[in-house]
Length: 226
Image (cartoon, rainbow, N blue to C red; front, side):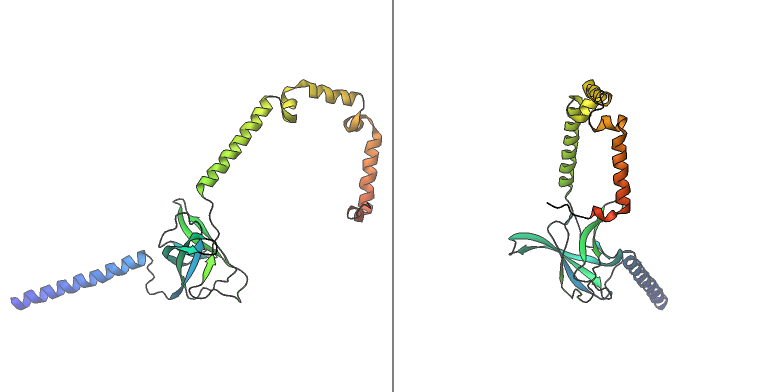
């Protein structure tokens, strides 16, 4: 009986152990865990990162090549200001030129932030292990809101000026005197508008000018003597 009980416990223990291994493997695969992936560290320096978190993806030319491992503050003595240093882990086969552009991008509708790298052209000068790239700061939302508010205020001012019959558009919409002035100029054959309606000489001059430019287009590039 004792031997049978021990055998049953051994089988149950092996079954539980195998189940735990399968579960752990499944969790690691779902989480895209990269413990065994060989690669190297690089640093991205920003003034503002707009909510990037540890574990966020890093993309190179639109392809996932790594992830954010650490975020810390650093002090730049040359500029006398504090910046954000993002430490990333990049797959070893990825070569990043030093003239590449780095910025914070948004993924999907949920707004997850990640690091986007647009490859540069100087593949003779590759970023080495623990190297750094200066990132392009994202635009803070409060600046976008201020800009939108300023545009709305300007539009409101323009609309109010039109309602107050100010400017050319306001006069065209609300002041009949401008119509009368234009009609009078046309009727009296005065100015360019009147000539366009009644004087064929202006049409002939324009036609001759166009014909001359078609035959001698180089005149458009010729400088007028001072």
